[in-house]
Each structure stands twice: as structure tokens, then as C-alpha cells.
Length: 587
Ligand code: ADP
Image (cartoon, rainbow, N blue to C red; front, side, top):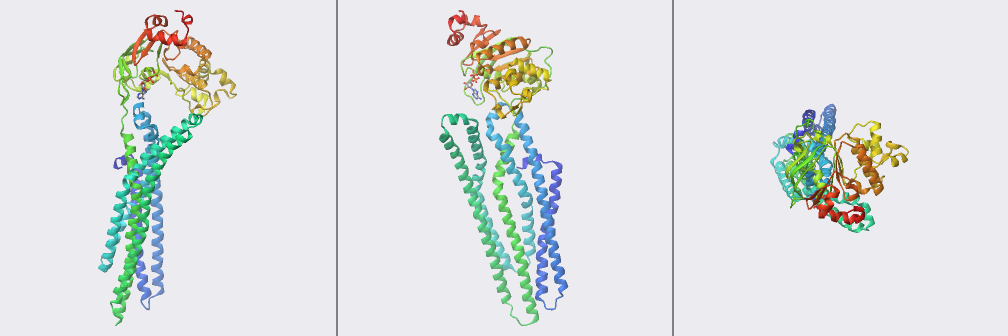
């Protein structure tokens, strides 16, 4: 938690100092009240007192109360301000950090957990700041000050107060020890709940189609019930504290009155002096009572902190975990490759997923020259996606070198590297906004460039049908477009950038054969000079590539043109024969 303080800004520290002044003022005014109360009691009980004195003491009481109220409001206001702006910064820091993460860190934390950490966890810390600013400083100051004020009065009262305080400390400690682990778990259970809800919502169509609502509900219920039980236990224990507090407060008042009565009774009414002594004890009793209540109230306030503290501490730890994690993919410094452009080379590259057991890619070496089309084919799980993911550094190779324009990708400044590559993923990703925003994403495209990209990607026909053209609305995740349309738009997005290397990761499989063919022809003529790396399932898609690399269980099983491979590579032949007849293949 303390480590998170370094994200506080000077302005917030300043607000903090101002609130300290107001907190001390409030405590001072609150503790001044009993003094005036005692004065009024003395005046009322003493015959012949002037009414004016009572009025002025009462007036002072009123002023003290108003002053205390004003201070309290100011502290609340400042606490809310500090907490809100601080948590805003914390959320922004988290967002930036997560943006810098490679897939390895994102997978390690899990998306659900990262969302809870940047929202719910930050809220917990925010709540702790608000409450603790009002309580953590005020309560102990109040308690110590009040104890000092009552120290000189009858020892019996002090003893009664001490016993009550000791009892409260014991009860509070037991409650904290019991609930601390439960409250800490709540944040983790929240992750599980989020995960379950996300999974269900993203897969809602599959869930419906397979009538799997009950199954999904069971999974959700499990996470939900566990969270409920944890929270119930922790909250019930904490709720029990409240009646205990009231009970001890009432017992203490009773004892103070009782002890007071005994003390007053022990003085026989014999003279004016003894009457005065009795009145003195009565006034003391009233004052003592107020102070003792202040002490107990301080403990009540501490209970409030005790309720939010364990969760907030755990939340702070989880936030720090994210902020302290350094992304494995670190940007290099190089911003210029020195004239070479559009070259991709793998030199003895091997790759194992972080935490994975075996090599997914082994000893991969090939070179794609400027303007060439290199295709990758192989059975599912043979490592095609993994291979192309190494070029934009979604992951770094475990061994060997991945070179772009003759330079190791690790040496590039990440922005420079990303500028060289246009990547279209297997799953078309769309963002809420317009078609133009989606296609020009990451580039400041002129309308002609946008239209050209849409034209080449064969999106023009369905875009023009939309009426608003490129200003047509795209729903979140592109749900108002078909799979093939989304895929074509994501190809348009890649074409809209002036990147020298185009990577298509199984992008064409969502397209029908006709569009696939038209698109490939258009790509060929319109993107001449650009290097294209294509991952594909269909032989038809890659038949005309300059070079085809056949992957089998992470190794290169063959490399060459379609014709060469048909003769030399058995794996390729099998794939080809499974899709086309011998005549079509013209063997
Ligand atoms: P392809 O694109 O050829 O279908 P992939 O490159 O997606 O194959 O996957 C190759 C292998 O790597 C598979 O065995 C798969 O289980 C494994 N794999 C893919 N992604 C991950 C990941 N994030 N963590 C661990 N293993 C993975």
C-alpha cells in the first residue's frame, strides 16, 4: 500500500496537509464541547448564576458544533477529491502498463483479472483513502486527546473506561483475524466471477445453440456462491461488531452514572461546601461521559477502516503486481534499417510458449525477399500462427533470430517495427465506430487511400450498399457484419497503411472461393513490391505463391513452389490431394 503512495501528486499531498489541519481543528472543537457543557451544568446547579453566562456558554457550544461540522465537511470534500483524482491516475497508469504488455504478460494475468484490477481494485483503494483520511488520523488523535482530558478525574471512571476499551480491542482483534483472509480472497473470487461472466457472454451464441445454459449457469453459480459465502462470512462477523460496540457503549455510560451516583452519595449533605462538592462531581460526570463516548466513537470509526482495509490491501497488492511487471518484449532503439525494405528472415528460430512444455517451432530458417509472396501451410497446430506472431514480436523467439530488413526485430524501436508491418489476424477484430475509423485505424488515411483499400479488399460492394458508405456504423466487435465482411474490412485496414510487409494469418478462410480468388488477384496487382506472408488452409489460396513453406509439428517439412513441393514433399502432396483432385493438381 505504501508503495502506491508514490503515485500521489504534489497537489494531493497539499490537500492531504490541509485536511490534516481541519482534522485537528475538528478534534479540538469536538473536545471543547464537554468543557462548555460542564460549565453550563455548574451554572445551572449553582444558585444565583446569571442567565447571560448560560447563554454565552451555550452560544460557544453552538459555535464549536458548527465549526466541527464545517471542518468535517471540508475534510470529506478534500478526501473525496484526493481519492478520485488519485484513482483516475492509477487507472491511467494501469491502462498504459497493460498496453505495453506482450501477450505473455496478458495471458499470465488473464484478461478478466486485468479488468478487475484496473476497475474494482482501484475502487477499493479509493474507498480506503476516503475513509482512512477521515478516520485513521482523526480517531487516534481524538482517543489520545480525550484520554488526556479525563485522566485527572476519579480513577473509578478511568478504570471502567479502560476495561471497556480493552474489551473492544480484544473483540476487534478477533474479528479482524477471522475475517482478514476471507476479505482478501474476495478480490480473487471477483476475478473468477468476471471470467465466468465474460466467457458466457462472448460465447452466448454457442451456449444457446447447444442448450448449454444450465451447464454455464452451474459454472457461474459456483463462482457466485463462493463469492457470496466469503462475503457473507466476512460481513456477518463485521456486523456483529456493531451491536457489541453499542452494548459496550451503553454499559460504559451505565457504569459512569452508577459510579457517579455512588461518589455523590458518599458525600453527606452537611454544608454549602459539600453541596458544591456534589455538584462538582456531577459536572465531572457529565464531562467524563462525553469524553468517554468520544473514545468509544474513535474505536467505532476504526472498525469502519478494519472492514475495508483487508480488501483494499489485497487490491493494492494486485495493482502493484501489474504496475511492477516489466513487459518481456522491450523496445529496442533502432529507427532505421539502412535502406533495406520488405525483407523477412528467420535464422534457426525455435520457440516454446512461456510455461509450455515442448518446442512449438524448431529450427526454422527461411527468407522472404522484397515483393515476394511466401505462404505457410500445414495441419492445425503445426505452428503457422506462432511463426508469424514472432515477426511483430507478439512473442520473442526462444532461440535463433528473426530479422526484418536484415535487423533483428529485438533491436527495433517498437513503433518503427510496427510501422513496417501490417498484420491481419485469424479472427477479424472490429471496434465500435464507423467503417472509416476502423479501416483507417492507426493511419491518417486520405479518402482516396481509404476507398482504394476498400476496393482492393473487395469490400466496396457491401460498403456501398450500406447507404452511408464508409461512415456506416460498426457495432462493438463488428457484430453487425458477417464473418467474411469483417475479414475483408480487416484486410482493407492492413492495406490502408503503407507497410512494406503484409502478414495474413489465415485471413482468407472466412471468404467464399470466388471472393478469395478475386481478392488474391487484386492483391497481386495492387500490392506489388510489398512482401506478403500468408498463412492458409486452402491449397488454392497459396498455389501461386513464390515460395510455400510446409510446416509439420513445428518443423519445416518442405519449401518450394507448388509444383516442386508436389514432387518433393509428401506432407504437401497429402494436403493437396485431400483438397483437389489429381487432374486439378495436374500431376
Ligand atoms: P496453427 O496456426 O498451425 O494452427 P498454432 O501456431 O496456433 O498452430 O499453434 C501451435 C501449437 O502451439 C499448438 O500445439 C498449440 O496448442 C500451441 N499454442 C498456441 N498458442 C498457445 C499459447 N498461447 N500458449 C501455449 N501454447 C499455445
